[in-house]
Length: 149
Image 1: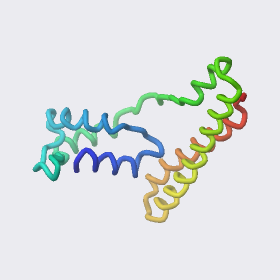
Image 2 (image 1 turned 30 degrees about the vertical axis):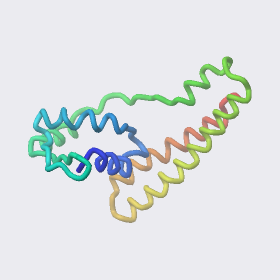
Image 3 (image 1 turned 60 degrees about the horizontal axis):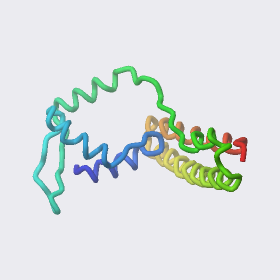
């Protein structure tokens, strides 16, 4: 898969509970190739560069799965801005909370749909991860109701 294809696949599967950027993917692929974890394929149209995971890459991935995941990183841009509420106008705060409410409402609906689809297809592990996203967006919406505006 090319970097763009990997990014699209990751967005479909992981985006509800794990964020990444295109620049991260494109930055890491050459590093993974240098380490022998992926190999370069034949360049495709418009000089697109496909990669394939190597046996060493599969072993490294398997090892990674067994490692302790570490602590969560909480980074919520709305909460950060609310923390500086006195520096906002009332209109800015209302707009901030309204926009966040719209985003989490849409994201909640999408995560619920993806979780239902995962369950229907028999992907109980994917569904479990997607239920985290559902709970996260519900929590965010609940918090937004109490945010001072």
